[in-house]
Length: 402
Image 1 (cartoon, rainbow, N blue to C red):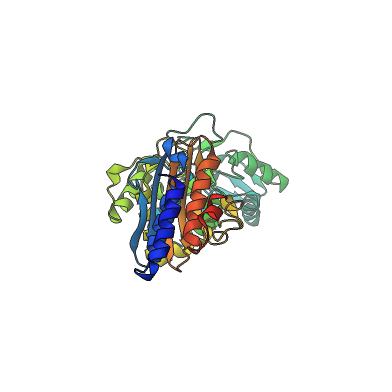
Image 2: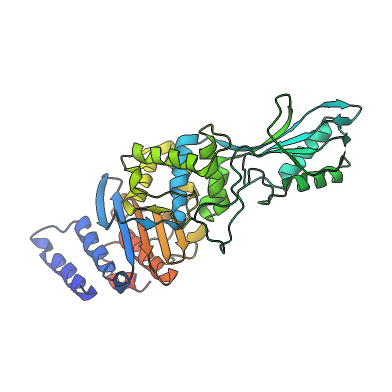
């Protein structure tokens, strides 16, 4: 059906308004139908659901149960599960211990680094570790650096990741996003005039008699901001493995996090067997959800204000920041839509929230798959959002010209 036919339908609705009131909902449905007449859908797939949170009713849908790749909108599911399961006060931790005895400034024993897969651990945290060692009066260490990476398994990459992607390395001990944690620690010790015996790092579990020197932490909100605004894959996988480790499994595995995510989906009345989950970031080629699933996850977050209060500020804002900074500018959707983007080869997705032109709060999921150009999927998503945000008297051509 052509666009001009929908324009005719909309005009007919307007002409009959005197006899029968045309509701905002009726008008929006017609306008969304017209957006979906794009020839893009002749050669690609779309899953779409729009939910009116104010009325708690379905507003619009198109193949909402079509199983599609998520790309980075998987991060929205990871974020909601983490906030719900770990709690909004959760903190990422990296700890430093020592074994043995300190005598006259000499530690006869080892330093033990315990990794908690904190992606934000940086040079300032490393300096704090060394400062804490110095405060114990230690000038020389007759021992080695031990590394406890028992938080997770030894898999460095996620299942279904492409070999030629810019993939992060999944290690429990990270500093400045790098895995050479012990090298950075030894270098900082030497800069602080603390000598340490040579020798390669000694892997192992934290000894029971080890004494804590320092713990550095970062809040879940700090991690969420980078994870969602900038779509940071390392941050998302770190969040994913916090979920995995919360099960008590040592070492934890991706399947442990997936079991928690599936339990969450069942809690919100979705059949977890209908979906395929592989990682927390959406890098995997094996991540498949539906627009219905993503919409209901966002609906759950809205219904639980402790979760929503931490999720909502982390989402990119259309035309303002993050991965939506350059999108929907100059439209009614600018500084209105807050949503997580997703983009991998032939896949473009968007899920989040907006305030519609009737004042109602809306959540939505738009999943384009099989798109040759990312711009094609993004244009359709931007038009859908702009239709929802714009007064119904704005000509459709204005939206199509985005």
